[in-house]
Image (cartoon, rainbow over all chains, first blue to last red):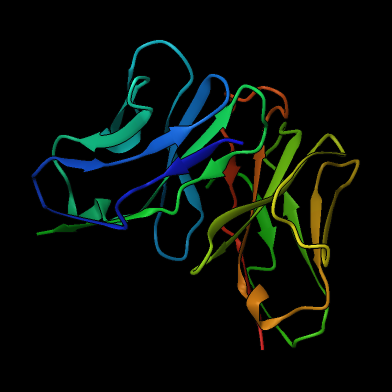
Length: 113
Length: 115
């Protein structure tokens, strides 16, 4: 079955600095990768996804993610962090054989002024 | 607003009781998913329905059941509730149940507290 790992429970960055939230995955076939963000007491909001094509995917709120097949990674990045980016970020994966989406444990991003 | 509607938003009930959570998917979406989010187990996939039929099953307990109705809304039934069932239950929907590149969109969740 497909699975995803987020190796960092917490990431702290200063406002204006670049941020990276890490994600690695395991699938049987071709991966379909997603990033979601969750603000306190809210549902998960879709940020971006990789299906096929360009390894660099651009999404909402200035976020982007880089798909790396050899390293089975899909790290979320932003060139300049904002305090308002502070939230819980989830990486998720499907493969071509399974419909259900599996989520990582989440990474709490804190951006300090 | 994702377009996925969940009711109730909050629910407090006693151990041993039964509750029903309701979900209306986004307009045009045929597939509905249920997830449980708790502090100790993270976001767990429970079950998926597509156009009224069960499509995939995850870590759903036997005490829990779900269905999707002809109007495509879905209900998650939780019975013989235990303290450990306290969690945030999410419904999500997508256009298709077979195209794995489809994005799924989440509702705001139903907070269940079992006392």
